[in-house]
Length: 274
Image 1 (cartoon, rainbow, N blue to C red):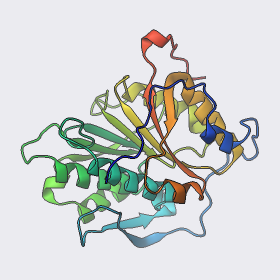
Image 2 (cartoon, one colour):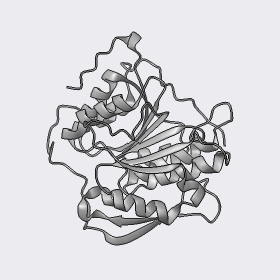
Image 3 (spheres, rainbow, N blue to C red):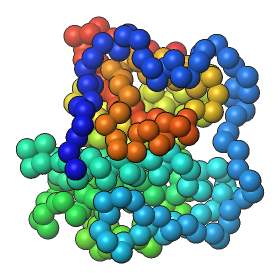
């Protein structure tokens, strides 16, 4: 499989963007601050088996779910979209241009941890046995026990060596165990609560430098979601990913993947999250 189109992370972010136009007006505030993704009923003690194109034959990921503590305790569509994209990107990596292997990756708002677990599998598969530079940190404000359970359920001893589960609350000081900047930041289905927009952007700023690749998978649920992406573009160059072979399929489900890179100091951006 080869890439069909390169993602231009440094293009002019003020150019007309089809992704933003699909989100509609950013002034629609219906349901803001109280909105969370709806789900049919709490999932407690359930599990789901997942597989993604390009994974080793016969290997699946079994994810234990527990949404009694909130909607993050189940697997959402954007996480599956992100997993497929990570496998695709890793399959197209080269020694000269590695993706997950040999790099430091952190996932935000991980919930069940499925995306970080998949990232660890792919990174370990491509890394040498003595490669100590590969790291995957899976973070959330909640669900730490659930994430640790899923890590134990799915990862081999070698894969667990490169993974760490950490608590991280957006907008709060980073713990001493979180050491930015990271090479890759992953966030799936994190854009749904307007009160969290500014804290999330602040945390993205603190975890990154202008070399960090930020990958965001998101599902459009309301027009006010556009406010997040408009704010994000104040501090980051942002581009929709269209080279994913599943693009046409997931776009019909109002799902998108964006790549972002922090604007350099030469672009004169002041750090002000409001």
